[in-house]
Image (tube, rainbow, N blue to C red; front, side, top):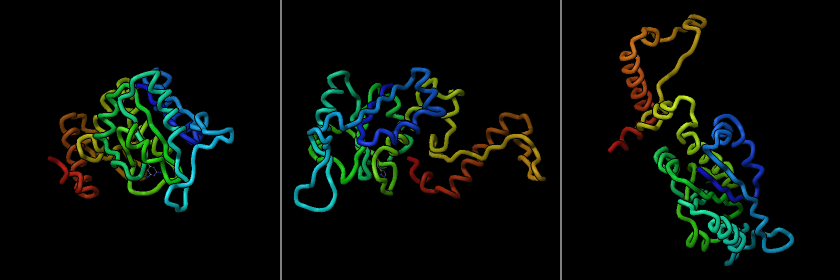
Length: 227
Ligand code: 6GU
């Protein structure tokens, strides 16, 4: 998968995508992330990409021209499946959205700043608008990093144990069960016997029961959503 990200603060995207699992995804050639500085398509020598909003009011708006030029250039090079705008008024990111985006070939992500982008770009270029939750970030970059991570780890071959994403919290609308590692007794705090039983069926039943209990206690809304 290839992901092109357009940003006015590309530095914010560097570190989060260059470590751990996102690093491995890129080293293995399963994921290619290209971050583009919007200023290279600025309207003047000062690098201007934003302007005052029509109708007045505080806060700048990201101008049409730099974004349209950036998108035209990228779209001339390859076919993109989605042009995503990261914005707090987008649809809230879910595991289901990450799953379906992980099946795509090429994605563009646009990180908003200031008051956001000129609405004409939303109307004429953007195919999907995504928020990562009901709170406001100072820009779309951290949200884009979250989205790339959520998608990237689902690409076949990225996780060591290919099945492990299947047991994530949310994959079945259930939270993950508790996990333990050595020692079996730490300060008298014991690992549940069933996990030491060596009986895979018992272990599986216990994990499912625990996942269900956790979900009931912490996120009953997930169980209600079930169709
Ligand atoms: Cl995608 N952008 C910004 N600026 N704030 C957010 C967000 C996105 N998602 C939640 N809050």
